[in-house]
Amino acid sequence: MGLQIGDLVTRREVTFNDLKGKTIAIDAFNAIYQFLSSVRQPDGTPLQDSQGRVTSHLSGLFYRNVALLSEGIKLIYVFDGEYHILKDKTHEKRQEAKDTAELKFRTALEEEDLDAMEKYAKGTSKLDSKMVAESKELLDALGICVIQAPGEGEMQAADFVKRGEAYAVGSQDYDALVVGGTRLIQNLTLARKRRTVSGFVYIAPEMIEYENVINQLGVTGDQLICLAILVGTDFNPGGIKGIGPKKALDLVKRRKYPVSIFEEVVERYGEIGFNWREVFEIFKKPNVSKQKVEFPKIDEEKIKEILVERHEFSKERVEKQLERLREFKRKSMQKTLF
Picture 1 (tube, rainbow, N blue to C red):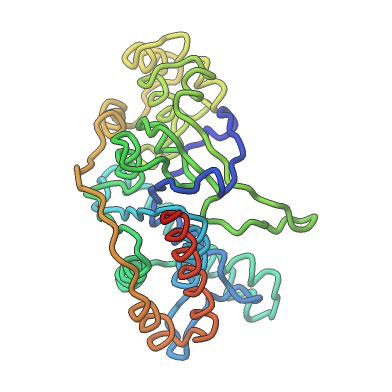
Picture 2: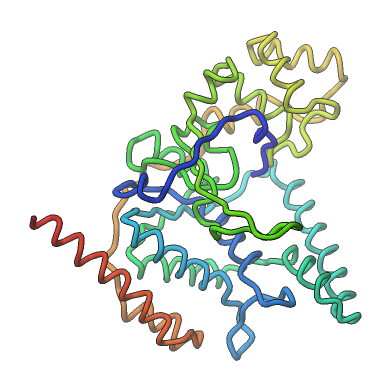
């Protein structure tokens, strides 16, 4: 989801060493879409095998997760289940944005404008059921726990953290905080460098903690949910016209309780066009299951079958990454014996 509260929360930089031995619950779709958008060729087109099948997501999942596993981090990937009917408008907007990006990309392609091709191609990323199934297959072979959530993946990930089965949620979005997820780590699945207009900048993992956010903003959990609704969620995209993050924070702190908050909103801004109570309940009582976390064994042969035999990845490069995992396992066993 895309809550616009980033400017209101404090964060602190963490290192991969800080996360060693910890379990991170990843919002799977959030991560995979990042890979589909960022792992591309110079002209912006995604990586593909000789049959034209997109492999950007598999490349991202493999190389990034090998790096994290080699740092001693355990991983849970949580996939979205059925989306709530209130997300229809959000899905429509996303599809419209993709359609627009597709048209602009085709124009750039005809004009042989490489910069424009790269720019607009990223907005055309599509994830189908076959790609999802193959992503799960690869993750399982990597020894990563794969969880199918009944509803929102990020909310299920947050529940694992609240239950103590994971240390933090890994996501670029903020929804895990709104449902009470103890810790949120951003930039965990991104490249450590990001290209900007002025060049490349270093991007480090950052942690945001629920208690710090609550204390810093001076709000309760219910007020934080109301703040999120006011600025807009996937269940009420756009929020309330005329209310930004700072104005929303002032409003929820003055009126304190959800009913009072939205009574004032209606008085000052007129009818809001959606049922705030329904959206509030989605965050207050998220649709999650009480599944247990179980980690499968690494299956090197399966990894090579998926990547090398099926999608023509370089055998040498895949083998090199698998050696990283073997080396980490050897060192871990030596420390345990010592």
